[in-house]
Structure formats: structure tokens, C-alpha cells
Figure 1 (cartoon, rainbow, N blue to C red):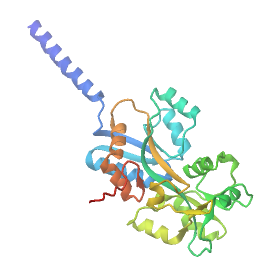
Figure 2 (tube, helix red, strand yellow; figure 1 turned 180 degrees about the horizontal axis):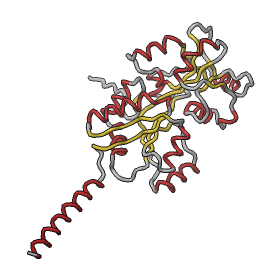
Figure 3 (cartoon, rainbow, N blue to C red; figure 1 turned 90 degrees about the vertical axis):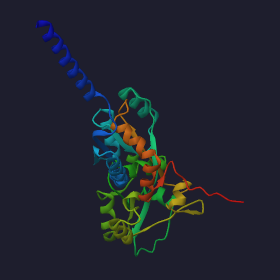
Figure 4 (cartoon, rainbow, N blue to C red; figure 1 turned 90 degrees about the horizontal axis):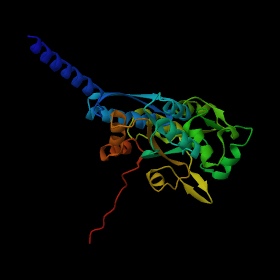
Length: 289
């Protein structure tokens, strides 16, 4: 009898151990994940999250908006598994990332986006030069409006101009959409927003926002560049930026599963439907003879 009891006990413990092991095993197709993204590319991040949850119904992905630099700090401190970034990290930041996460710095690039300069629809201004941008961001007039400090737009423009964000002089209206909606009150100002704010071709809100402003081509050395698909694909538009994911996850769990999905053909088609240039899919022309 005692022998039977011992066998049963060992059998039950074996089942419990097996269950415990199964619960802890990594899974890319079920579980919860929170992604931190700057508001400037919230739309494309949410679209990719929706696509992943459709393909894997047992996953629950939440997208939270946080200024780019603050999101990166959360990743370093282990408070986030995935963040979306646009600016290049400096060598010290890369070193810190690798030391804190014990992972190699491997940015998962998934889309070409842009920072664009907008004015009210009835503005006589038709373009803006790199010289004007440089001079304006050092002027006490503060004629450029950004969505805040620590934001991806400010970081990227500062990086492009080889400046520190704190060196630039600008006005603030919190939120890309708010800048568009309130820009008409400041006819002498120029809004600086992320293209993904209104890049979705058939979205009603995007259409309404596009009708309110005029996107200025950027003139550099006598040549005009626009943030259209060609300008993004060739990266000739001066303020083209590449969006990428950074993860604090060493195994193939839901975070890395989502990142891999975003870089596959299906994920890249979602990026394209957002009105952005997919990083891994380019239009190919084949000549038949």
C-alpha cells in the first residue's frame, strides 16, 4: 500500500513539474505585451499590433505612447520589453543597452517614416530650405512648433542638424495632431510633425488633417525634395528616418515574435497600407524581352 502511495505521489509531482515547466516556457503566440512608442509613429505600431493579434488570437498587445527618450530609459531599466525608436543611438547608449540587457544591439528596422514641415493651407509659403530650418531653430522668434521635448521629432531634427536638442529654440504644442489643428492660429509659425500622423491614405481622420495643412518640400543645395514614397524609398528627402524596434528579451517570446512578424512580408504590407515605406519591401520593375 505504501509502495502504491509513493508511486502515485511521484506521478502527481511529475505532472505538476511538467505543468510548471510548460507555464514558464517562452511562447510567441500567446500572452501579453506592452509596446512603448512615441506618439509620432503610434498609428503604424498599432496597425502592426492589430495584425499580430489577428494572426495569433491568444496574444494581447497594448500600445502605450511615451516620448522616445523616456521609452528607451524604460527599456534599459527593464520596465518595457519593446520600444520603437527613430534616432540613432550614440556609442555610449549602445554600450549601456548591451550591459543592462546582456544582449547585442540589433535594431529591427521595419519602416521609413519622415519628419515633415507644415503650414496652414492658405499660407503663401511653398517650400522651406535647409538654411531656413537651421537659422530658424537658432532664432529667438521660435517660429518652429514641436510636440514637446524628448520627442522623436525634436531628437531627429537635432541629430540631422548636428545639434543637441537643448541648443534649438522652438515653440511647443503637445501632440502632432494638436499642432495641425491649432496651426491656423499662428500663421507665422511652421509645424514640425511625424508623417505617420496623417499618412494613412484612406483614413477619415488622416484625410481631414491633410486638408488643414500644406506639407512643404525641403530645398537643399537648389534641389527640392518631398516626403512621398519615392523620397522615402530613395531616402533623398533630407528628413527621412528609419523606424526600428529594440527589445529587452533574450528568448523567442511574444516580443521577438511580434518583431519578426513586423519584418515579414505581411507586416511590411501593413506598413505600406499606413502610407509609409516598408523597410524590407521595395517596388521592383521587371522588363520582359
